[in-house]
Structures are given as structure tokens and as C-alpha cells.
Image (cartoon, rainbow, N blue to C red):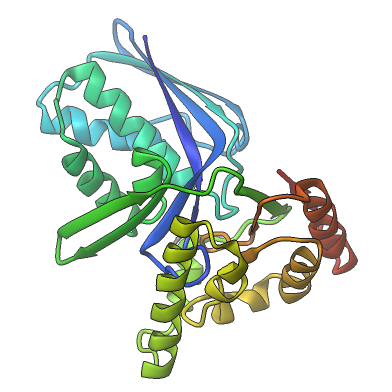
Length: 285
Ligand code: HSE
């Protein structure tokens, strides 16, 4: 039996749209075992009711790409998924499924795909890299891909830094929210984000958390997504007042992520309460 543990991820971190993503200490488990014939998929945990248990399952579809590439499709496969990452909340549940399927299949059929090959395959399925890369590589990843030429690097995070996430009880579809983003942005907004993305990486590398508040602001995606999240600005302000160093939309949302080096429980409580005051049920982690 092959068992893979894949982390949840938070993408963008404010200004790093499609370039920055960070792994979180919350994991889905993917188990593959060979059986004599057919496909059996068992799902436990988050999304257990809704996720398909046939060839449409994303873990299976990712695995199938690896099996076919290696010309070694198994006669029979049993997949067991234990899901802890909430589905459709901006915490990389689909990236974890794709990465889990690719790694498990790579081991099972001995395809020997390199990290770069797995990254390319996974990103081609997901359509954007900033959940896939940290799900596969761990840590905080800066990733750039232009016309298939990928370059990435991982940065060390300050040991005291933790992420607090407030997860609203509604789903946002990443594909739909991406379609609502503008295709062109002004030079002013581009410069605004480049400066903040650079500040953010430097702040994390140097452990200078005092500039995270400025560094995690964004003009490329959050302004176009926040209208769908009641209380977005209030939750961010409340988290900052409670001691969070920087706060942003997690991926395409609706989860909001706060980075902090203390006051974690207080930050979680005020984020949840503020969401509730705005009519949104939310859980925190
Ligand atoms: N960068 C992607 C987006 C991440 O914001 O659409 C989605 O999780």
C-alpha cells in the first residue's frame, strides 16, 4: 500500500497572485493499493458526500495521467482518501488531490517522474501553480512560469510565524472567480503589487514582521473578489487589531488567512465573531 500525505496550501498571500503559495499544517491522506480488477474509491472526511467515486475523481484523473505516461495502467486500483482540507474554500483542496494522485501513481507504477515533471503535469491540470507548488514542495514557494519555463525557490519562514485561517461556511468556485478578474491592469496597480510582493518575501526572509501589514495588500485580485465575501474588510481589520501581522484572502477565497507570531487564539476568535456579526458562519484553524 502507498500512503501519501499532502498539505493544505494558501495561495497569493495578498500581492503574489499566481506566484506565491505556502503549505499549511493540515493534511489530506491518499492511499493506493492494487486490487485484482476495477476501481474502488473510498472517501472519508470533508466532501465525502459530494466527491465522485469513479473515473471522474480528481485524484484518480491525476494518477491516470501518470499511469498512461508510463504505459502502466494497473488492472485494479483501490483509492482511499481521508480529507481534512475543506473543499472549495481557498485552501488548495484540488491541488492536494492532484498532487496526491500524481505522487502515489508515480511510486506505484515506477514512472520515475522528476519533481519538475510532476510540477508541470500538476500545474497543467490545475491551471495555476501557487497551490500545486507548495503542496508538492512544502514551505513557502515563489514560482514563476512563462510559456512553460518554470523557476521556483523556497524560502525559510520565521519559526514563530503561524497562519490562522477563518473558513466561511460557503463555497467559492475558483474558476468562476478567476473569470471575474480583469484581463488588463493599470501600470499603477502592477507596481503596487510588485512592490508589496517584494516586501513580503524580504519581510518573511528577514523575520521583519512589522512590514507584513503593508506587504500583504493587493490590487490585482482581492478588490474584485471581496464583494462576494460579507465582512471581508471588517474581518481583516479585526484580525489586525487582535495582533495579526498581515491578513489576506486565501487563494480565491472565501477563507481569510492571518499571519501572526502570537495571540493566535484571540485572532481566531475575533475573525470568527466578526464573520458572524456580518451574517457568515465560519470555523477557524
Ligand atoms: N492564484 C489562484 C487564484 C489561487 O487566486 O485564483 C487559487 O487558489
